[in-house]
Length: 342
Image (spheres, rainbow, N blue to C red):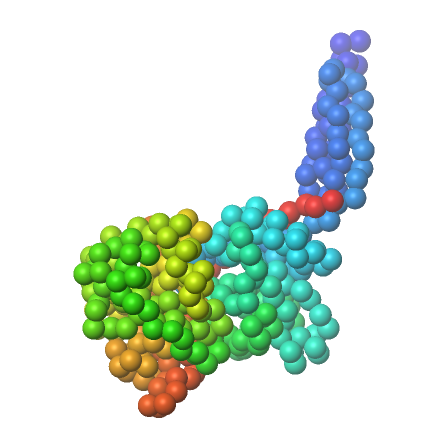
């Protein structure tokens, strides 16, 4: 009798474990645990949609550095509101969603990608573009090992190019839209808005809005020591930007020859790497003679928040216009998983 009960107990435990595994991995079952180990397990099967995502670090070749990105590999029937909710749940600076279409259409127009912050959808952003293109090249069989991936973003088509053979972290280079140069800003007013002394700014350099798809107010500091003191106050920053032609501030300072330090504070936090702003920064630097046309410049960002990022930039200036804005860096994948929605 004792042996029979032991066998029954073992069978019940195995069955419960199997159902729990199914619940977590295969299907969505709402299970009621029995009070007694020998009692049956009651489950209600409900329809759930599973969405696969991959987590990567962008503008770094080292795991757990650079800027994090969650890439959802196929949005299926997700609505914009559901994408925004998932982006808020990942709680990263940006999350991207790939909308698959016929392969012939994708090759012609680009793979459709939408970019969300925790607060809103963006027309363009740098590290999501680079990270998503790297995912497509590495994880979608029809694009495996491609030397170029074209994305269709809300801002339009953006192409990311890759060297032929790579192992580990994957290096890619995007060509951003030609820059649009916007308003000049007053040094004193900007210093007050971002909470620093005007003496911390490089007064011989202009403060100007530049956009390669997202408008940034480029704010030059006189040194990396001055830049390290930046502690933007959300309310004053938002008040200023609301009345300007810029979406965010991007603060830069010279570090070494052809090396600049950068910081970008937004949504009461700080971005470890901002590829779209880096494109604006190099456009600004070559336009105003602080960098040589088509010479590579290295931007280091995320140092102060211990997420160091390395962004390689260059742009051509012919004396009239800036073009061929290129932003490059590495991406490394660190995790993957699934979200379930009813």
